[in-house]
Amino acid sequence: MAKPVRKRPKRPAKKRLSSAEQARIAEIFARFEAQESDPATELDYQSPFTLVVAVALSAQATDVSVNKATGKLFKVADTPAKMLALGEAGLKPFISSIGLYNTKAKNVIALSRILVDNYGGEVPLQREQLQALPGVGRKTASVVLNELGVERAIAVDTHVFRVAHRLGLSSGKTPDQVEQDLLRIVPEPYLTRAHHWLILHGRYICTARRPNCDDCPVADLCPSRHLFMSAHPGGSRGPS
Ligand code: SF4
Image (cartoon, rainbow, N blue to C red; front, side, top):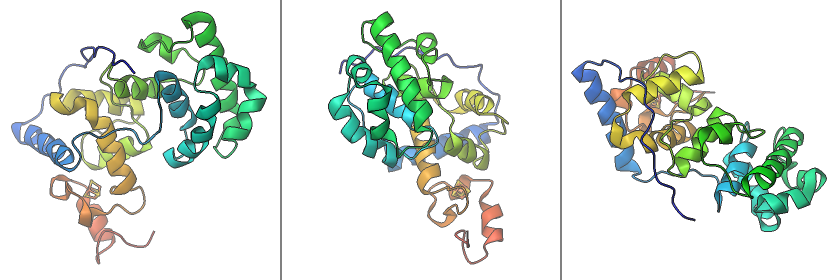
């Protein structure tokens, strides 16, 4: 798959931070990098089209469940034309184990039709066109554009939202506000990978109900750690 040219990020104006806070944030991302220098999506895909479909299917579903479904689906329909030939009724059995599969099937077929009719079967890698596809909102477009190296973006899902708050990186009330905050403060060298690190950290360490502060690589830099330690005096992994 040819790698598209990476565009300069459209970053909001940088936030004014004390030098101590700048150092804390830089250290957080340096430690994430030390643990995993090249983080990637856990969704399986082979092309921009299969990536768009996989990300669209992953809303309110685990990557594992999506990979299980797309493993079989992409063997028979890995292009918009093949997906269109499969049709909504043909697609549903492949994805019926995924939440909201009726709506997702409708959207995948509708977006495949648009790609065939308007884009010669290719996925447009411009944010506006991508976001206009059925079932592809801002978050999905951000994941796709960032993953393909087209635009540096920090898609904010439930994990990124939670971790950003706990680490004191944002107090934004909406995913959009958190994204803007992150774009302002994440140091340039880490910008492309920040989304993956924050998701992986939220998925495996800083989980919603039982954050594993004892094994957290950034615990000494986290303003929330004491909340969980005091809630579970024997360790951060108290009963859920
Ligand atoms: S110290 Fe605990 S709350 Fe803070 S980021 Fe690590 S796991 Fe999350």
